[in-house]
Length: 194
Image (cartoon, rainbow, N blue to C red; front, side):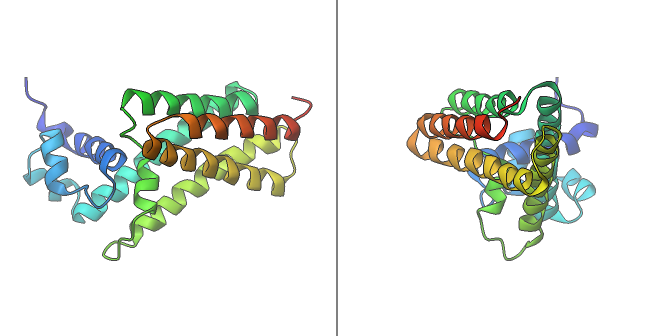
């Protein structure tokens, strides 16, 4: 049974996010998204009148929202160390299952210069800021001052995303494991009464 035309928008967003994770922003074209998803060509400009830039931007925001939900759930259910550990475990699994082919679609957009669509970098910055605020809010609830919470949240995101990039290059989870161990030690000292 072929996919329904009415879900083509959803399929294109998912497909764009998958392509961003695997190949980066520059290689995420309308043609590749259509080939990946089987969505009809005519639906592209119906759902994304802004073309490729709009599709990629919405895929980045959607991916960011998905991770934000994960952050909120993990932070509400666990202490800061366990929550951060769960993000590293998630990436360890994603990297291993994909043969080190996937990364973060938000990083894919942030890392590339896109002079024709500068809104893509701005969207990535907004996503990173939202993740940082969510983590910082949780750290504040566990007793850290606001400035330290904000810095620590930025550091967690930078360490995790940087480690994922290194893992892809090295075809190993060693950078992720090293970053997780150092962050665990740092967080243990930051939250001694947890």
